[in-house]
Length: 50
Length: 469
Image 1: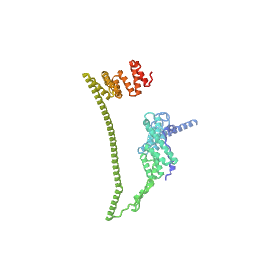
Image 2 (image 1 turned 180 degrees about the vertical axis):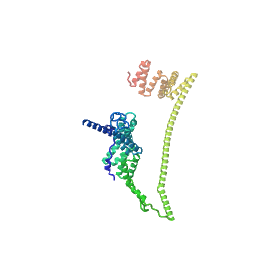
Image 3 (image 1 turned 45 degrees about the vertical axis):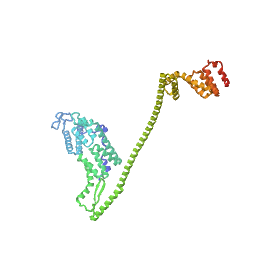
Image 4 (image 1 turned 120 degrees about the horizontal axis):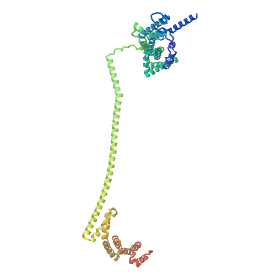
């Protein structure tokens, strides 16, 4: 049986045009490739230190 | 595919041929991103929009620079009514690849029509308002607001899902089902939509399955649910067979009712109409009568005025005739006098004319002509009256003498003797007042007369008891 209150929590307000700019700037664009490059660089730095 | 370290084009090897770094993992990540993009594209092609969003977001988690995946994600958002989310994806895509990017075209199309963008924003605001109503418990207001939202943007899946949820909450199952099916037409594999639809069908289907599987008893009423209401169709009742007599009786009753209706409803109405028509005619005739009466009165007044004018003209004509006659008489008299030099006839005629007419009412020419004739004939006429008057005076007929002396003075004011004997006649007839007046007038008009100079007049005045200046 559907519980209205619980289902309502799954909805959220839509993004308005005025708030689009902030949403774009605040979007986290970090991807797996960034993480990989970061990990490789960190591992290389650790190897150099050792 | 380019090397993450030096940016050169990668080959089929697991290392960069330029800088030598190991790119095997990097290549797998890029391949995974492309794999998810392909999956998202396939789902979008079969209208599994929610699934496409999941795959495309996954693709972007592996490679944020996958512009094709980002553009497609924007398109899917746009199709589901999430216009601002679509715009955000396209703007990021354009920043990642400024040139030769289809996102640029999408953005331009949206921004070139400012009215369309305003409408989109209004739709989103209304949806957010409806969501706030839901949180506040104002479900009816939320339904109204969501209907407005969907009238503006019928492809707004999230708004339609919320509306379906509200219908489910208020147990309007058919409406909820209708909305959810429309959701499925846009997004065919949306988990939320499918779950709600399953719930709705669980409520609606049992009755339908029962209807199909079990045979309904003939005497039981038909029951079904519509918009949260149980509809009960009444059992069909067959009317008993009527006999021929009953039919005739019913026909008779119907005929009587019809006649009664005609008598009580139609006849009074017809009478009323006839009365109204008659009243209307009476009013019209009355108006015509009033108009004719007014016309008659007007004509009577006109007749009266014309009669007065005619009488006035008649009077004027009489006066003119009288004057014309006076002119004719005067001219005839003058003609006779000039032809015959008969003073007696002329004097008699002139006297008649001057006594009959009022000289002031005639023209100046007529008066001047009379004066001229009087001066011509007057002395002779005056002499004649004087002689007659003197004869009467001598016979002591003072009344006739006074009358003649007055005429003699009228026709010749310079007749001194006439004045003298007029005063004497007044004295002899014992009219003292007029005698005094006549004596004084004589003294004033003829101061050089011997009768004045020898004090004869003064003596008469003293006799009469008058004072002499």
